[in-house]
Structure formats: structure tokens, C-alpha cells
Amino acid sequence: MNTVKELTNELNYLGTLSNAVTVSGPDHEAQAWMDGDASHLGEFEPYDWGGADPYTLGEPVRWG
Image 1 (cartoon, helix red, strand yellow):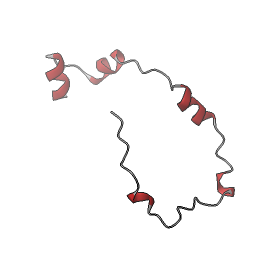
Image 2: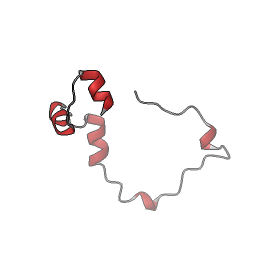
Image 3: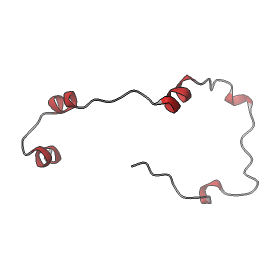
């Protein structure tokens, strides 16, 4: 609550703040993932990393 007060220089209640925020729907790629059928994934073998440790490959992805 202090952050809201610092940004707006007034005390806002969560309900008032949430009414001011508009969230758009999923983009095209996200909608394609949500519409996809993952019900048959159990029929496939796990991915073979070929002896490499997947946790040591690359850098973590950060979304900002």
C-alpha cells in the first residue's frame, strides 16, 4: 500500500486501483497455446538430451 501512496501521493484502496487497470486478452501466440490439444502428450517418450544436463544449458529467460 505504501508504493501506491508514493506513486500517486494519495491513499487508494485496492478496489479503486483495480478498476483503473485494463488488461488485454492473450496475444495470437498465447491463444494458439491455449487452444492446443495436449491430451496425447503422455503417448510420447521424454526428450533425449543426449547426456547433456539441460539445467546447465543457456541462461534463464527473463521477461521484463
